[in-house]
Image 1 (cartoon, rainbow, N blue to C red):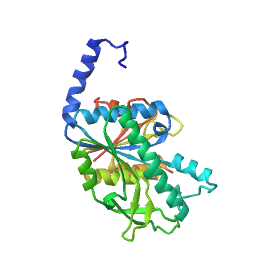
Image 2 (tube, rainbow, N blue to C red):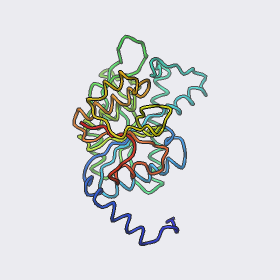
Image 3 (cartoon, rainbow, N blue to C red):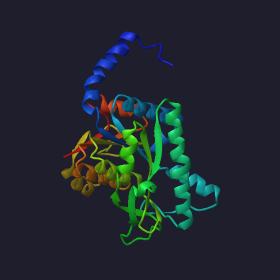
Image 4 (tube, one colour):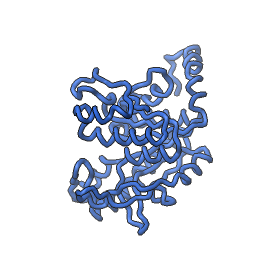
Length: 289
């Protein structure tokens, strides 16, 4: 139902103001990495889905990539399996790998597809196993993570086929090796690799913070823009630390691989995707060359 508090004249002005940005992105690919509170809160979920449906309807090729950590933890808890983490990554034994595949590729993925359809969009659910889209091997950095995978290649053809038919691809981040073994893949890493493989114009990561902060205890210390060459110094100074490092590293790789723009935004703000894309100021932290 339309908002009766907004006049027809105001609606017209908003649409006119958005036109240059629609023209800028028309026909281009934008990858959205979906996670955090925006994936849990029902109202925020609807806001995100309405944003990506709108972008798709005006001719922007939207690719939605998601994880599902809370859903996986919830299912493991129901089955009496302990969640364990190594260096911030979920330790994934054989039983956990099966549950990851079931939850991400089954319930979470199809719930999002269903929500997009209910909100008036058209979506197709995919996972990295489909068409061997996300090729992976066991992550080996000296620690044992079980069946946690490292991406060795992305085949974008299944995604492009879905986009050609004007559907929104919704991608669950599990991967597969040459022997058919399924691996749990970090969603931030997968989104960045997918964006690179699609030569995307933009990758947007939804987080539970305003963006990259100089002081994690001060939300007013937002860094609105960083260049990839500044990242090492920011890590050394502990401004980028902990779980923020893999997020930033994934965006860095996407930019270095040719993605024009990488942005980390606050997914707790309704319609933050539209605010980012349809304004000069944007929102969150922009990473560029």
